[in-house]
Amino acid sequence: MRFGVHPSDARITMQHCDVLIIGGGLAGLSSALQLAERFHVTLLAKRELEISSSQWAQGGIAAVLGDGDTFEAHVQDTMVAGGQLNDMAATRYVIEHGPAAIQWLRDQGVPFDTEAGGLHLTREGGHSQRRIAHVADATGAAIQRTLLARARAHANITLAENHVAVDLITDRHMDITSSPRCWGAYALNTLTGHVETFAAAHTVLATGGAGKVYRYTTNPDTASGDGLAMAWRAGCRVANMEFIQFHPTCLYHPKAKSFLISEAVRGEGGVLRLPDGTRFMPAHDARAELAPRDVVARAIDFEMKKHGLDCVYLDITDKGEAFIRHHFPTIYQRCLDLGIDMAREPIPVVPAVHFTCGGVLTDLSGRTDLPGLYAVGEVAYTGLHGANRLASNSLLECVVFGTATARAVREAEQPPVLVPRPWDESRVVDADELVVVSHNWDELRRLMWNYVGIVRTDKRLERAAHRIELLRAEVQEFYANFRVNRDLLELRNLLQVAELIVRSARLRHESRGLHYSLDWPQTAAPAAPTILVP
Image (cartoon, rainbow, N blue to C red):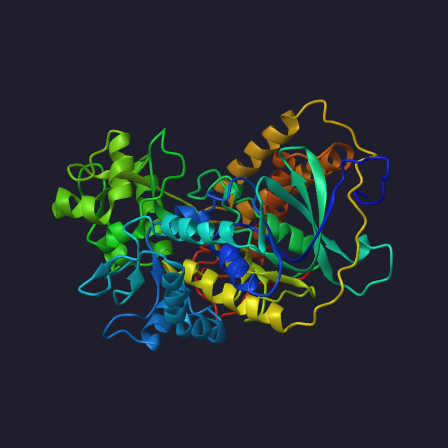
């Protein structure tokens, strides 16, 4: 066991707060700002708070804001993209609270682009209307910058950067009898190298997704599935883990690490071409480049394998330099820095993992199976996304459920915070070598890409399951005997998430949305989520 009392170690610290939030993206910050009106909030971030998937979001945030648009149209677009696997109650809840979420962000000072006195709305793949509010092509960065400034200035919010959550604190970490509940978390302070204890009456997981389980991803290095793995170990159900969204257009360049070419480039007229200039999307789907992401990603994957290509090309040159500079300044400059002038030549792109549609099962107030524990954003499964996320619904989900979770915490019974046992490092030593971590990390990401990727088979999934189990055994032995570090913790969590993805994929005997199996090419009825119980 890795917990207990070791009073001789004076370096161990214990901190108390009303609410502990793990994760500093939009889900975490929106929850924190609304909870801080009443509670003292401590927010943990794995690295600097500027590093999150929210920070990297380019396209925008979807809501019914324009003339002629309706909640019903947004619901139907979401359901079509999600392969009709979406939970209708959750979908309607999020979409009907969309305008209020945008207004809350504007009240915080987010400088959305405007036109003729109103919000400028763009359109993205899968949407039947222009309903994407944005800040040029760097919406996530603008939102993150605005909310982070407000959080840093708030007297009731303590921001703890460079803290990697290790595990949730539950009743089994208590010296007194307690009913099953979450009482905070243990977290590694990567600056000191020691694990600290954060005791809290309420804990919110806002840790994002698990893109780093795959070799190619648009996600930052922090996206290692920590919240998913911790919640599973604590006894929470997870759902729909087989639905991993591959964004069709990640910049293909040896010096461009995980740089996303926004959906909005296709929304504004960009077309996909083979190296010889042939446009191929109309042959795959009547919606062409505006088809949902899973359709476009599979089409690109098909064409790359058919022709033996390293990439395909996204061409928006016919719009002209002035249009491109105005609408996509960040993308334009990044490409230019790499020697690609997107106003005069197509952009080389490949599919890459972008979003985890499944997650920790919650209700419409963010509550998980474990009392005192909530989950918000990409880490959570609310039922909104179904078998595939519609573009720009993710930032919306963060704000809507951040608000709902804050309300649920305010209305919940406020128990006295019990004192958990501090983390015990007395029976572990420093690792003599870390090659097992780096080697297993690389092997995991390669096998997930090759065996559990855009197109799957039963045999590939079987091979992946077998190898993941061997890797988990190796890493668990390492974890039990040596002091933890960030790479070890992330690898431990990624292996757990990989096991959940493969287990879920093997249970789904059909092809739907993001899960496409050559052995089960038909769509089965009725549509039902995959729910795993610890």
